[in-house]
Amino acid sequence: MINNKAIIFDLDGVIVDTAKYHFIAWQEVARQLGINFTKKDNELLKGVSRIQSLEIILKLGKKSLSQSQKDRILEAKNQQYLALISQMNEDEMLPGIKELLWDLKQKNIPFALGSASKNARRILEALNITDWFTAIVDGNDVSKAKPDPEVFLIAAKRLGMQPKNCIVVEDAQAGILAAKRAGMKAIGIGQAENLQQADVVLPDTKYLNVDIFDKL
Ligand code: BG6
Ligand code: MG
Image (tube, rainbow, N blue to C red; front, side, top):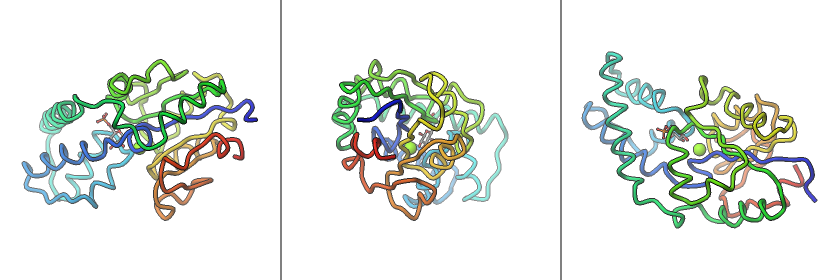
């Protein structure tokens, strides 16, 4: 039986598939800037903060903007993203996640959120699972984005757990690096070649279960 361990979940790409909505909103930004932005390019934005995402798109298009132009674009992008996720409900949770979180709750295994998103609380509310988390750490709580370990170290602190007893579930390379730098175990969701530093890689959230956490 799993003992003295806690789980820290990333949000986007682990609990819910929001990448498709971020993509629509970033594609609109790119279109307005005359930059070609593909689904493959969108992979570069996974786990990356909002401002860094814009910087990556500008770099792809070899464009530079003033800070006030960037601020205006970030605000417009977020408004479009919020409109896209406004109808989100628990049906959009990734396969097996709701059952897994419920199982963890029943087994008294504490879990936290460790997300780069400043919209994380709003999304958890829409999914109706806010109260299930012992701690929530999001993009509003950190000064350094993943791959910096800050978000996960704050989560461990709020969980009252040692980093070595925390297991992070992440879909992004930056997030796996952040977990390892925090001295935690990391489970990658996705393709192994993108998540090389992970302790375990699973192709889909549906394969996550308490036994996997127990063995780590
Ligand atoms: C991460 C996503 O979880 O949050 C990124 O993987 C996103 O794609 C980042 O850019 C910031 O999200 P938000 O909601 O604050 O714009
Ligand atoms: Mg993610």
